[in-house]
Every structure is written in C-alpha cells, then in structure tokens.
Amino acid sequence: MNRAATVRSLHVNGGLRRFWDFPPEGAAPDAPAIFMVHGFRGDHHGLLRIIEALPAYRVLAPDLPGFGQSEPLDGTHDVAAYAAFVRSSMDRLALGPQTVLVGHSFGSIIAARAAADAPGAFSALVLINPISAPALEGSSRIATRLAELYYRLGAALPEQAGQAVLRNRIIVRAMSELMAKTRDRPLRRWIHAQHRAYFSAFASREVVLQAFTASISATVRDSARRLQLPVLLIAAERDDLGTVQTQQELAALMPDSTLVVLPEVGHLVHYEAPDAAAGHIADFVESRTR
Image 1: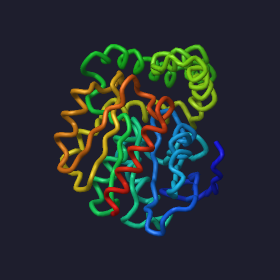
Image 2: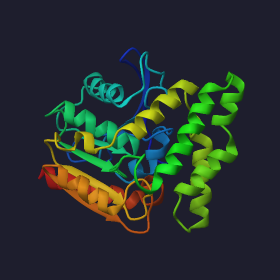
Image 3: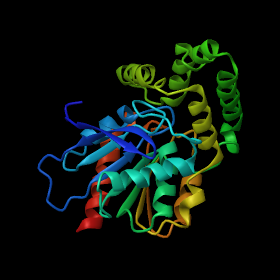
Image 4: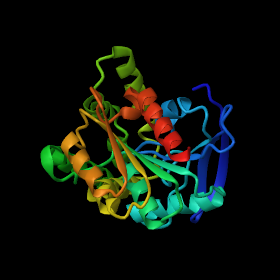
C-alpha cells in the first residue's frame, strides 16, 4: 500500500474509534468523499487494494467497533448499532450529503441500513459482494449452521480455550481456502496471509458472536425498498454467499440500481478484483456527479 493516510482517533457512540483518512491525489474540486465499511471479522486493511485504485477520491475507512483498533460498543453489536455508528461518524467527520457510502459483505448490510435510515445523507451507495439472500437458506445453510456452532462454542468455552478456538490458524486458513476462488498461487498466498494477519483482530468473543449473529440474521433485502438513492451492486459470479440470480432479484427491489457481475470471482472481490471494483465505483460516481 503506497497511499498514505491520516489515522484519526475519535470518540463516536460512546467509545474510541479509528478512522483511516486517505486524501485525494489530484482530485477535481467537486469529487465526493467515499466512506467505506468493511465486512465481518475484518478491519480496514481488507479494503486497501480498492482504496489504492481510487486515488482521485478522498476515502475514509474505519475499523468497525469491536474490530481492528476500534473499541467495542456498550450495547449489542448488531446491524442497527453499526448503521448508527456509520451515521454518527458522518457527523463527527463533518462529511456532507455528497458523500458516497460503500460496504463490502456484512458491510453491505450495514451500509444499506445506514442509507435507508437517513435519506439524503449520502449521494450514492455501492455494495460489494452484497448479502442478497438469507444465510440460513439455500446451498450455504449447512456451512452457516456449522459456523454458528463454531462461534457459539468459542463464546461458551472458558476464556483461554475460547480464544484459542476462535483464533486457531488452521480454522482461519480453512475459511480462507473456502472463500478464495483465484487460481493465481501468489495471490492465494497473499490472501491467506491477510486473513492470518487481520482475521483475529477482535475485541472479545462476545463481539464476534454478536456480529456473526447479525451477519446471518439480516440481508440487504431488509433495506432495499427504502433506498432512495442510486445504488451500484458489484456482485461476483462465484460468490458462495449470493448467487447471480439472488443478486438480480435484490437489484430489482431497489428504486434506482445498477448491477455488475464480475466473472470468475467469489466473495473476495476486494482481494481478487480490486481494480475492476474500483473502476466500476469511479465510473458510477462520475456518472452521478456530472
């Protein structure tokens, strides 16, 4: 990552939160800022390749409360609380309604809820690998149930044993192997290294379980019909968490949506196709600001 950022530590919604603020490089004066929300068990690092490919824009990327370097919330880590965090962050950072909101994976659920709950707060919404169908339905339901048992076990065991289960490198590697679709061996090794480095940066076992429960209990569908702004959905042909059909159905629920499907990519668009995703984001934003 060659793009430098200012790290901002701000008290938002009752705790200290970390934000990475990337200034634009030669941007047009009217270029909107972009606020990005990462996915479950990740932190801002997962979005860095897309940020690198958007040099003309100011990009702000927080660690969600309870993950990375941000303190946990006082209450439950659910979609409503995270959406409230996004809206409060906008106020705290003095970001205006021209801001574009971006969310990846679980972050797509959060971003959609934040935009739906605050009409006029954002100029556009971008959802990468949007969660288009309930996790407990379809072909992924068995894997989801197993994952749920895993996180519940991690929370129920004594502290040391529970931490060992949740941070187990073999399990983290297995998750990474399942999600990565690329056949590029160096890229696969890099993806596994990213998950090994950042997939266990969480505040507590309870935070992880609450966030996981939120991630499988909601979808972007919950907010789709209330999204009164232009929405770009960047889906993936081989995404195990959302088929092309369910992505098309999701897009049809939105008043103003554009769907693009990246071929030969799975749920890790931010790792496997960041330049393509950034290109679509830039084209979409420019088309809305002309």
